[in-house]
Image (cartoon, rainbow, N blue to C red; front, side, top):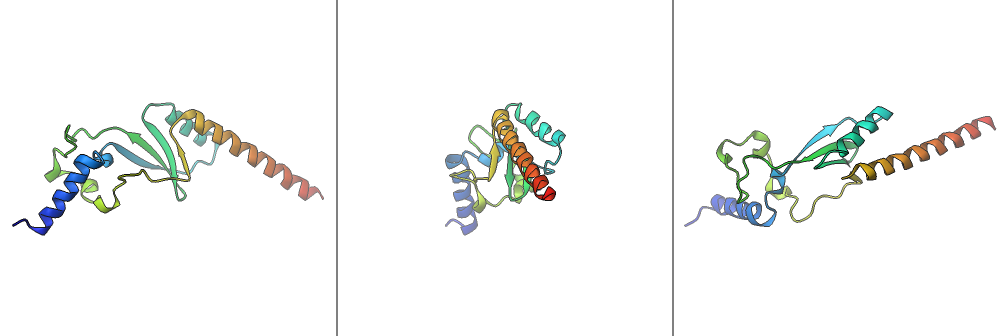
Length: 139
C-alpha cells in the first residue's frame, strides 16, 4: 500500500521531471528597486544586453530574471541534493508551479532593444505631459 504523502510526492516528482522540466530550477529572480533616474533605466538596459536575462514588473515590483540552470539539477530534471536543498527550494509550493504557462506580466522585456523602445516611448509621454502641464499653469 502506498502512503498518501508518497503518492502526492510521486505526482509532484512526475510533474517536475516530465511535464515542466523543472522550470523553477532553471532561473533565479532578484527584486530590483523601481527605476527613477536615467542611470536606473540605463542599468536595466545594460542587464538586458547580456544573454539569458529578462526584466519584468509584477504588481509594482521590478525583477531581474537570470535564466541559468541549477547545478544540482540532473539530466532527468531531478534535484541531486533534494534532502539537503536550501529553504527557498523547500518553501516552493508545487501548486503554484508555472507549468504549463509562464505568468504574464504587465511589463516584460527579454531584449535590450524592446526595453529601450519602451523607455523612449515613456520619456516622450512624460515630455508631452510636462509640456501640457506648463501650458496650463501659464493660463
